Length: 111
Image (tube, rainbow, N blue to C red):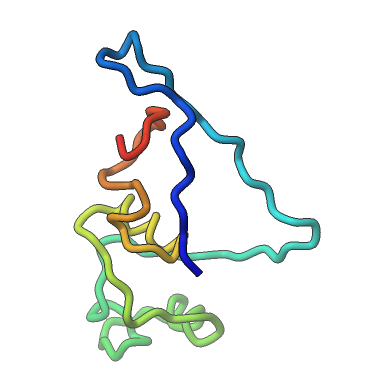
């Protein structure tokens, strides 16, 4: 399956005044779609979790790992937002359009 980036529906002018942002309609889940909980721990590596062999006591995280899904071959970036975008979309961080720590939606692609 190939992902096709949707065409930008706004206008990018020479100045901000000539530009028009675009926010697509948010997607909604289908009726009966399952709920999924993703727990992502920032600033943490394999060496800090007992479930990956650490001698640090992390019983609650270890229990969650035993009963859930553990990723052990996942690329991260030095910034949290691109990493989260990659995790949630299954795409490489550079192809998600999230290349920085996000604070707001500018309405323009990759900005």
